[in-house]
Amino acid sequence: MRIRLSTYSTRPRGGVVHTLALAEALARAGHDVEVWALARGGDTAFFRDVTVPIRLVEVPELDGESVGDRILRSIALLAEALRDAGPADVRHAQDCLTANAEGAAHGYDTLHRTVHHLDTFTTPSLAACHERALVEPARLLCVSSAVAAEVAAGWDRTAPVVGNGVDAARFAAADPTPWRERFGRYVLAVGGIEPRKGTLDLVRAMASVDAPLMVAGGDTLFDYRPYRDEVFALADSLGVEPVVLGPVPDDELPGLVAGASVFAFPSTKEGFGLAAMEALAAGVPLVTRDLPVLREVFAGAARFAGDADGIAAELTAALAGDDPADPARAAVGRALAATHSWDEVAQRHLGVYGSR
Image 1: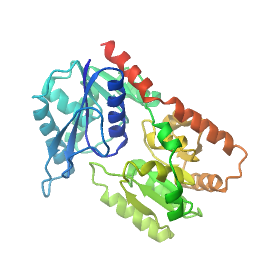
Image 2: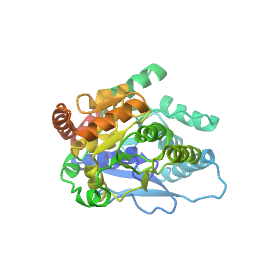
Image 3: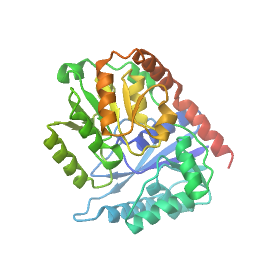
Image 4: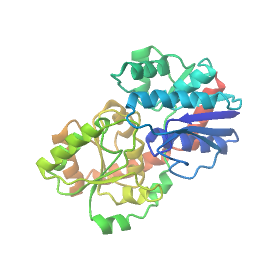
């Protein structure tokens, strides 16, 4: 089959990581796969080398443009470019932006769209785009049963669960030495500083945890500067000094993850938790918020907490490393990560594509 996948960015966010790994797995299965993406900020390539053909649609920066206007302009630019795309047996958008663009370019009646997680927008134009990308595509797919249940409850649509993969071997084999030599023991969070990642609760928790906090990643379409200011003001008032690394080069990320003493994942909303699964593959203890989706994905492999106090207690216990249950959790985590094969995820997608 000729399969076109589309994603909203070239940078290492979870949905983009998913898109690229899925595309390569589908290509290994013998299909003709192409990835389209929006490229902003002068980007000319994805955050890592990609083994399938790619097409990047430039989104020039405009001074003073609002986030909402930039997103709508991005959709329009991608739709215009897609009108000249070659034929595809499968068109598969990985987010609401690219679903709107594919729909505008070639209609929704044969469009697949993956719902990684559900967003909440207050801007009317963005809320309309989000709704259209859930209502109009011919087929929705989800990465977890919890998100599929939200889609069913909110939109009365049945979405097959295709799951998420992880390059478990890459993280299991990572060398943590450079990061440990540089920072000693540390608590790591990946995903940047934003409301959905629960950073405020993490900073509150770290006030009573005897280890530094490292924060990696975080490039996003949205403007979270007011939230970041609130996070840094809280950190300053509590004497917490987070080390903000920003996006980490792809070849360095496994070592950073493997070097962590604990991986903190206090997200308030997730669809799967790929970064947390990478930590389990590296054998790193995981503390995560007690959400239904994270119970679904990480049961038996993680410590769960409901608020900042609980997160602090679980981080402290994980750092102590004297819980008799810790070795069992680590073994379960490594085994769990090893079961999430991208090739199997690709086969589940092919089953959905073939059922249209």
